[in-house]
Length: 251
Image (cartoon, rainbow, N blue to C red; front, top):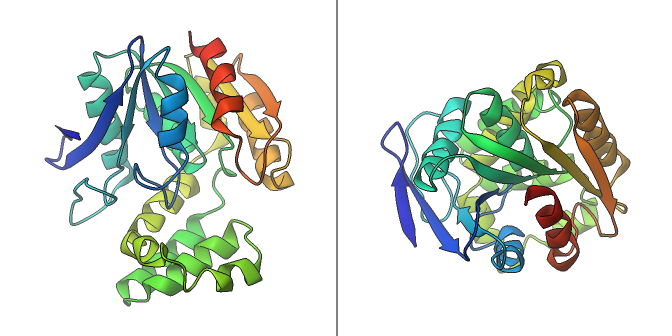
């Protein structure tokens, strides 16, 4: 585990694997290096890239600040890209895809973007406010469940996870759900016409229609963007299926 220091002094933890052009993987909500799809994906990509996986602020071994602004997450990614030598490619999963898009718009030195199922732009503002209220009231478990229901998990699945071994870890990072929904809630499709780097949009053939539609909307909004639909599950494609598609585009 290594760290970089973001502009506001927050330490961001990361790991590096492989050799080749730099590629930074950006997790979505409720995910970090110890829990989420990016670690397995990094292992698949390490034969072609120097792959960086990191804990977004407030998660895992990364620090956090007393107050949050979306710009802090752009600066975190910028610090990692700079550490990697600049001009890195970036893969973003879910809300991490929106973060990557917005970071590119804010001048982060990104060479290419590969994005998996960005959620609908501008639709999470009310959810961010509600989650913030729950977190401030110390009702982190309720915040986790409200988010899970909002993204389409069936109620019976949500209630069934209350006693799971990873529930405590989810509650520990519940404040970052506010970060993710603030980022996606403030996003605007019409701004993506200014994206000036090659961009690939990917979705799973078995994801909810809402996510597949939002993927298509971003693909139409970004000039020259490509889109691929792959066999997969709910908001997920196996790393062995996804990695060759990413490598083919990013190399």
